Amino acid sequence: MPPFPRTAHTPGEITLAPSEPSPVSIGQALREATAMETWLPAPSRLSEVTERLLGYIRETVPAVEAAAGRRPVECPVRRSAFGAVEEARHRAGGGPGDGYASAISFARGLGKAAGDLMHQQRRLQREGER
Image (cartoon, rainbow, N blue to C red; front, side):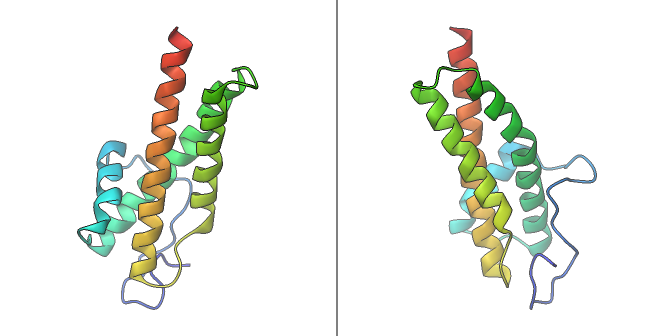
């Protein structure tokens, strides 16, 4: 399914596994996705950001899950990390709906989920160093 069905922009499918390294840094993708409340990117840029966020989530979820799994069951850091993993999987699994506005909402949701995942990964690393 094209990322923006029923619009003039149909560059192909968004996949969970990028075929090549993205030229967009994860920090840049997070900033752009969460700033989409105030500006609208070109459809090609939206596709780049979305694919980068999906790739980041795909790569980071197993690492956060493994690090959280090594913590005690009653640990609040573990619970928060697993919550972030669950949210990221949920956001990545849905895919964009019909149209450009839906693709914007999808990218914003991915940005928020990826940002939380990044925060939890850093938190787990800090806690592990103690």
